[in-house]
Image 1 (cartoon, rainbow, N blue to C red):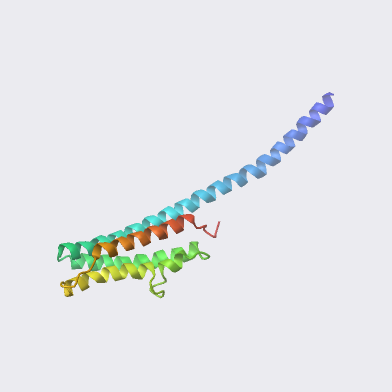
Image 2: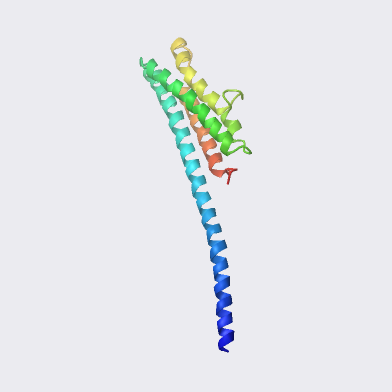
Length: 164
């Protein structure tokens, strides 16, 4: 009986060692991948939000308050163009099998892309100054941009990064 008890304990020890050496690292790797994916998505969404809101707010300030902050607006637009291209390349790299990057737009190649809509919003500041008699529903266009941004962010959160 002592020999059977020893062999059963030895068997359990071997099985436990195999489980520990295979399953625990596997579960840890899955958890680590999920954490990394969440971090990538959070950083990307933060970048999108910052770049869009900065340009929208600068444009809104110029149009609504009729301020002379054109230099600030133009600088925000330059930053937007750079950040938009970076975001687009990151979307293509992380989500190549998703429609997220197509929705964003590829350096203005896609008509009616989100990035082009944001750029058109910036252009409204000049239109509003030149055609001050024609009503532009600035608030409605602004809200459409923000809704579209939220939709893209939602798709990013739901999409699976392909490198994991």
